[in-house]
Structures are given as C-alpha cells and as structure tokens.
Length: 252
Image (tube, rainbow, N blue to C red; front, top):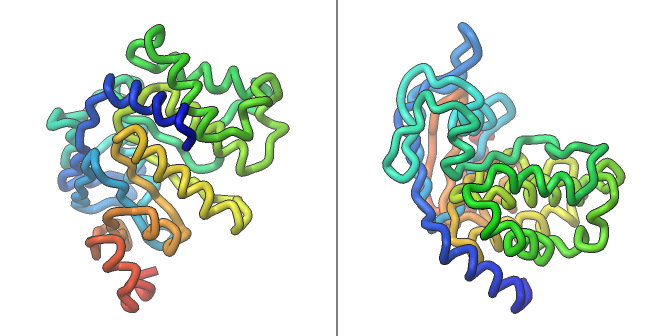
C-alpha cells in the first residue's frame, strides 16, 4: 500500500465504525435438505477469520445465510449487536455487510469502471466517499487503474477477482464476506490475492470472513479459523495454532 493509499484508507476508516459479526446457532439449508446445523461463529472487526472445510461442508451456504441470500431456519445473525434476521440481502448490504460470491461476480460486458460504480450504488453516503474509495481500490489493485474503460470480460481470472472485490469495497462495507477468492487463480497469484485481502482489513479496519480451499495460505493471513465438517463446527482456534496442528489436515 502506497503512502497515498494509506491516507485514503485513513479517510475511509475515520468515517466507518466497524462492528463485529456474530453467528448464533444457525441452522439453514435448501428446502428439506439441512446443510448447517447449530453453527455459531464470532468474527470481530479487528480480525480476519477463515472458514475452512471439505467440499460440501456448508461453507458457502453459511456465507449466503449471513448475507441474506438464503433464509435461516433457526438461530440468528447479529451485526454490531443488531439482529439481521429476516432483513433480506439488499437491507443487509445496506447495513454494511458485503458478500463477494464464488466465481468472480463481475458483469463481463460492462467496463471495469462501470462494475465498480455498481458497487458505489450500494454505499450509504455515495457523494462523500465514492472518489476516496475508488482511489483506495485502484491503489490496492494497480493493475486495474489504467484499464477502467475496458470490458471486465477481457481480464484474466485474477484481475476479474480484483474487480469483484473492488466492487464490494466501493459499497463502503463494514464487514467483508469472501467466498473462495483464490478459485481459478494460478498458484503464484494466490498468495498475492490473500495478502491484498489482509491489506484491506489492516488499512480499513473492517472484519473479514474468508471461505477458502487453500488452507495453508488462508491460515497464514488469518487471525483465527473455524473448521466446518458436515454442516457443523468441529474445530476453532488461533490460525497459527491450527497451522501447526498435524491433526487438522485429517478434517478435510
């Protein structure tokens, strides 16, 4: 992050009070198929949290439930101590919870700049923050800075992921949910992408919850982690402790 980017981050941080996210005994699924069973998780504003697990464990389902995309059957989600239950995805986004879904959620026929502007439309006070936020995003992802007029569909997978994250940041979120941000990236780019996500947390002071298959890299940039297995939390703890635990790999 450049000195200019740090000043931009300071301006954004001053205007945002980042709350914690509390997932309390959540049960959710699809129709008659229950995926999550009594899942509880806490992610503070001062933390990057990884949610790890095998394919089909329910990781993406949990993020969708938190973001209001999927209805919660039982339990609650508290953001800054306030229940989000029944609010719907649009209202939850307005409250400051931003979801970056798996699969590089960009509009390929729109330009990079137009994609980013769509995110700004969700921001709570667009006129005061949009320019500063855009400068921060372009400082974080300089590869996008000179390509704002190009269609997002012409970008590489890694660059499209930058646009997806940048679009979420343009909404001035107070908490960021990331679903498999390294999917499809070349191994050499995975570390860079997760380092940039860590920078977002450090510079903006917002909480981040990452669902990630690259276990080692996710734990490297996280403060704490939870392991989800068959829809239930089976392990949690400091990321450094889990990284050094040989038994952790048997859970995947």
